[in-house]
Length: 145
Image (cartoon, rainbow, N blue to C red):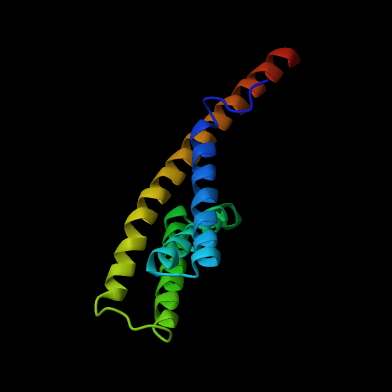
């Protein structure tokens, strides 16, 4: 039995890389006693990734609403959280004059790419499931006749 195959090869690489990166941040903070901007940025990217995936994964709860509205509300919620995090961080360190614009762009561009990939994949998955349902119904109709 293969544990790693073609379908899970890339996700396993991503998981390993994430665990090693976070482990490196923690190890540097403990051993070297430094927690600099690079480490903060890496942890912030992890936090924002977790938030984005968590919000995207909840789309099915809003099946009664138009998909475009769900996508827009998801994005507005997340960008609001990003701006709130940026604002809160201003109490602990001085921000660059373009910090809000930079955070907006740094989050929006990858999020849009990820959301497109997610919803296109979801569309194809639903299409595949509908095709399987039609085959089952066709088979059941043949047996009934």
